[in-house]
Length: 423
Image 1 (tube, one colour):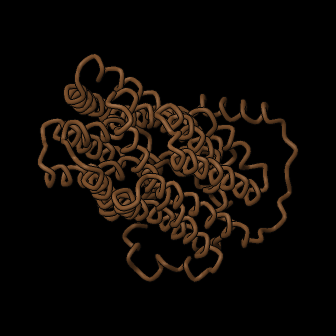
Image 2 (cartoon, one colour):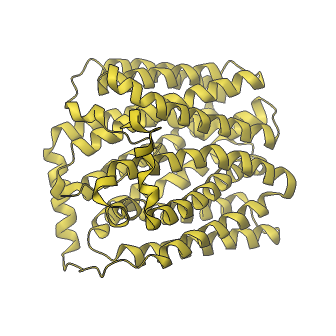
């Protein structure tokens, strides 16, 4: 799939007006989200010097996915997705606008920042499965694969543009301007969804509890899927330390300003874009298990190097390489999650994948933050990198179920995708 990314066929979905308009609206919203992610993490570092408090920002952002992704996966199969998405985006607009007002009135503190970060995480956790589920409704069946790849590019392009733009806004006008722009970006998505006149949805009458339990029982019986989740945890639980510690490292270890901090995020996003292209090349040469191993070891080495480096240019180079490893590991894990999810339980299996992915980030961030208070941030980085390299290397010796089709797909996104196959 990725080998065709730079051909004319890759952009065929843009000829469909509905897909193009929603893609643009989603890009604006994603840019606003990445602007705020960088701004909030830097703001937390200015409010507290405690690595634990700063790492809790990532926990507050990821924990809602642990709590709500699976229920959202069940709901997404039995609701009017357009209306549900509009309500969720309006909720996020109100939350971010409130953040702007609190900042304007100088009432925002680290505890309120954690609360509102959690609320934004709730909206995002409920949005993700529903948003991914609408792809078959907004693009023709013949363009599904290209549309999925373009959605991944949307995310990674926004991750490169958002931090850079956020850094400019942060330096020039302050964090309150980032909050305001992000609120406006949600309005752009609301407008795009409102203009989409979807076909009436036949809402199925279901027993929520029964449906949810059936999905969990099916997951428990699916050994290949469970084996995959172990690899997912082994990657995200250790790599999460980078995102948990980056604000603290930038401000207190590397003595950087907000502009330099945003360059780190921008280079991570550029690395992810480059990795999206390399993903297609690696797929033709390596098995999925080998790609995961290479990517995990690459990220582990980068984390260790970050504990030793201080030169600004070198740090940005390390972040760029980290982006390549991150995107290839998560893309492969997500493709395998697709492969091991039976069609009749697709939404619920992939919701479990999101839950495990984000949940391991949320819980491990607390652990890393606690250990940094006992030891030091740089020592904990070294420990995490070494243990990650050893643990992921050991898992490589354990057989992993995959088939040939797993290496012919492309996700090109940094977070788990809930993609629904057309029957």
